[in-house]
Image 1 (cartoon, rainbow, N blue to C red):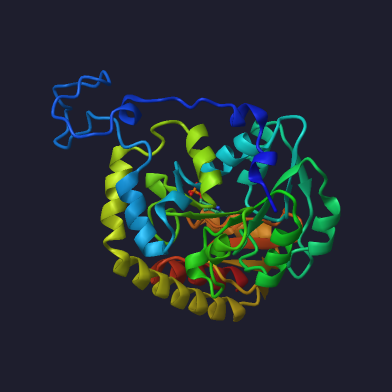
Image 2 (image 1 turned 120 degrees about the vertical axis):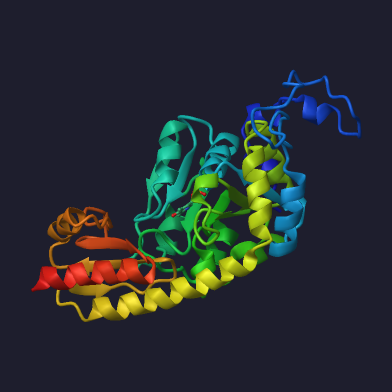
Length: 349
Ligand SMILES: *Cc1c(COP(=O)(O)O)cnc(C)c1O
């Protein structure tokens, strides 16, 4: 049996978390003189003078009903990036522990490891962009605490085989973090379903992509309750501000908008792929399960610079291992994609 407390840092096991005024008094009252807030209000019409709910109870209830995950299995962070950092701080002893990542992948795992002074073991994806399960399983030791799997993966745009992911969950002795920032665009089922079966899984999702709320900074982690409880102990007390909590609640009532734009994005992605296929500059389009496409072109840097000169910005990934010669292009609106395609047609000519 996996016992998560055997891999949590001793200082975190012993941690007495910060107890705020909001934590200590939970009943109903009419006079709040406990938190040194501004009793007179704020320059805004909304009541932003009060500290927000540290555990975002109402917002989690709404997310719970949409995701089918109990509230006690949900953590909210200032972006998924905060959830990633909090996981490092719970599980990884600086200068001693290590984590495994599978490049090319999202850059934040390595940055967060470096900030926390934690060794990174890089097991590249196979040339097919699949997980190198065998090498991952050869590379861990007793100090390997986190394994990051980004599916659909950024920047390769593919989802990994569900069987590979499950084998890793079964055999990796630490926590398997499955980053599903792009899951809403994917044919693959969410790994959330694995939470009822395994104790060592954390699934990350975000409001930054399909929900269209990158500016709010709101990320979700779904995990066994014991992990969520430690995440809540380690996070800054008021990590999700009141405006974000309110705006996210309103957005969750507009799930129809979100679903419609997911469908639209996928339709535009197909059109973009088909049009790029016709362009002689393009050598390969990798199959996408996300809201972007990875495209191998004849001269990535020249193409990138040319597009920049026209005010069209894509991501040059041509120096990244396994992505040589590739640009990563976000699926835009119909007119944005047309502008890109028109520009590329002229560049060929
Ligand atoms: C965009 C993205 C995120 C989102 O991070 P936030 O901090 O929630 O905005 C997370 N993971 C991956 C792989 C991403 O590409």
